[in-house]
Amino acid sequence: GAGVSQSPSNKVTEKGKDVELRCDPISGHTALYWYRQSLGQGLEFLIYFQGNSAPDKSGLPSDRFSAERTGGSVSTLTIQRTQQEDSAVYLCASSSDRDIPEKAFFGQGTRLTVV
Amino acid sequence: AQSVTQLDSQVPVFEEAPVELRCNYSSSVSVYLFWYVQYPNQGLQLLLKYLSGSTLVKGINGFEAEFNKSQTSFHLRKPSVHISDTAEYFCAVSGGGSYIPTFGRGTSLIVHP
Image (cartoon, rainbow over all chains, first blue to last red; front, side, top):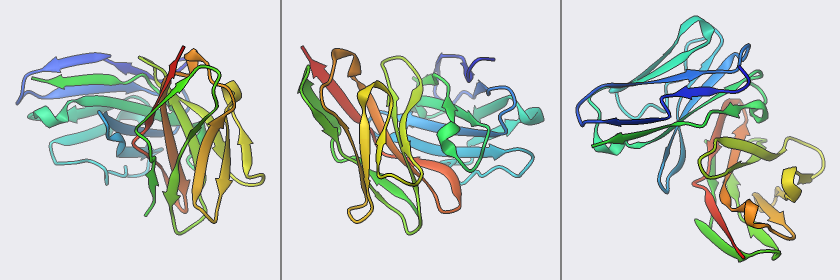
């Protein structure tokens, strides 16, 4: 596609439920990043995929968070047993060159609200 | 480890006035520096970047930033702002073997008529 696409754009869920957030990167981009944007907290790195390498999961805040990337393209971020503190905008970005993050393109994000 | 500090969470300014958004970073190795802009209800867009070479870099929409290694700063400036510049601005750093940009908390630029 023309840009990074994320779905859904908004998600309201009840505390304790699981949610899945989807990211479709730009075709051909080998690097994919997930960030979380909380009010007043800036962007918090969550996980990074590069090609077929093992992902860098160092930013995942707890074991309730996981992500996968199938076929080197679409990625799904899963949050199990959601908590109110998980409410945030989840941003996905993709890049064609892992050495130059300038080429990272961001999606518009999924706004998650846990009630 | 890298970190970015954006000293101002909010900067109000009148239209056509100059503005400076401050960014300081810490890193033990050479870095790449970026400014991203997020307009209301839109995704992040790259505004400008410093990779190497000239310390004064120019970006889109009349913005520029100056890399100051001794002060570990990368402040963003515009000589005359417009209402349409109202947005959230994020400073980011990467490099030194890390492919993952580290972002600051953001500065909300509010331009008043």
